[in-house]
Amino acid sequence: MNDSEDPDERADLISRLFALLTARLEDAAAMAAESQGRGSREDHGHRAQQIASLIDDAATVNQAILALLGE
Image 1 (cartoon, rainbow, N blue to C red):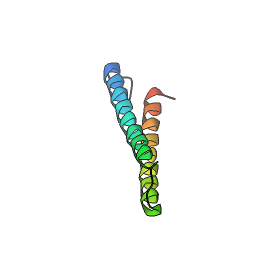
Image 2: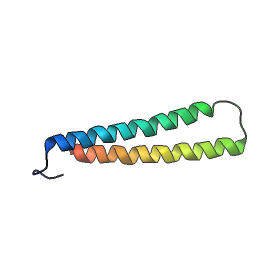
Image 3: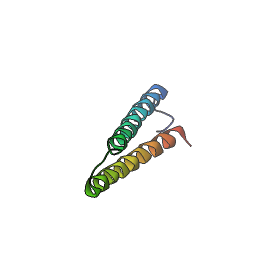
């Protein structure tokens, strides 16, 4: 964002990105919790791949937050 943009809009965008980050991390945590029980190797492998994808998404969102904050 540049200097001519509204700081309130930036703050709102950052807030929405944190909400998206929270959702991705909650989804990953829920999937990890569900995977603690018994399951097939194939099922666990599939869930582990899904968790990795969610974590990658979360990292991307986090990088966007940091960029908006100038970090």
